[in-house]
Image (cartoon, rainbow, N blue to C red; front, side):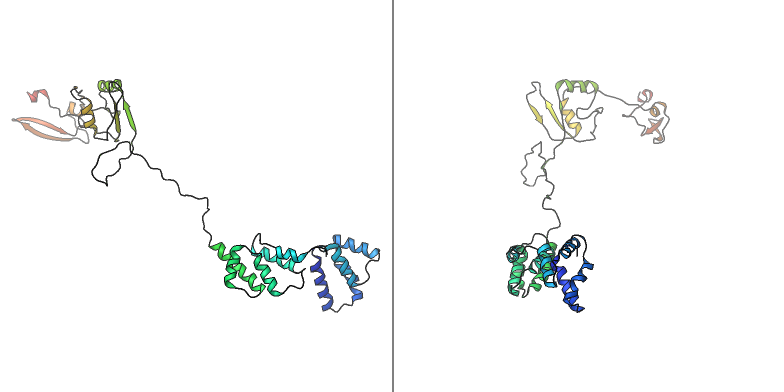
Length: 304
C-alpha cells in the first residue's frame, strides 16, 4: 500500500485477514510488510509515537490520512455526476463514488446512473426500461455502440465541389426550347492594321497559317472584328475559316501561292507518288499523282 485508494486497500486487507482467520492483535504487525513509500513513512511515524492501538483505530487513521474528507458530501457528488466521455469511463467514476455512499436503494442507484448519461442514451434507455443498475450499465454500452455506428462516415465540413456555369459569349436566336447552349471560346481581336498586315502576308485572319482557298483552321474560334471607328464589336459564331475570310476580304484580290514539289519538277516520283502513263490527243504524257504540289501542274509544251 503506497497511500493511493485507501478504501480499496482496507477492503482487501479485511478480506485477507478474515479468510486466513488472522487475530486482530496480529493484523497491525502484518500490514507493515505490505506498505511502501508515503504510506510506510506514515506508518513508522504512527508506530514510533504509539498511535496504533488496535485494528479499528488503525483503519480510522488510514481513512483520515489518505482517504477522502469526512466532511465531503459524496451522495451529492454522486447525484451530480455526469458523463463527459465514454460510458465505460462514466461507469468507473460512478462505481468508485457510489462505494462511499451508503443507504441508497437499488432504484435510486439505477435512476442516478441513468440521469448522468448523455441525453441520447437516456432516451434509448427510457424505451428499453432496465430494471437494475447493472442492466442499465450494460444497455448503456450497447446503445453507445449503436449511436457510434449510426454516425455519418464523412466529416460535416465536407462539401461537394461547386459547379461553375460557363456563360455563352454568343447568343443564337432559336425557336426551339431545347437548343444546345454554345460554349465559350477564346476570342482574338483584329484591328484594321492587323487585318491589312495579315492580308499583305497572305496569312489567315483566324490562325497563323497561310490562307488559300479551301483552308481549314485546326481549332474553331470566335473572331471579333473592329470597324473603322473601333466603336462596334461584331460577335459572330464559329464558322468555317473559308467563309470568314471570304467575308472579310470581299472585293479584294487574293494572293495565289503555288507550291511545286521537286518530284513534279523533275518527273521523279517519291515513295508516296503514283505514276501513270497516258496520252492527250495522241501525245504521250507521264501523270504523277500525290506529288505534294498545291495545284495541278502541266508542262507548257503539252498545254500548247
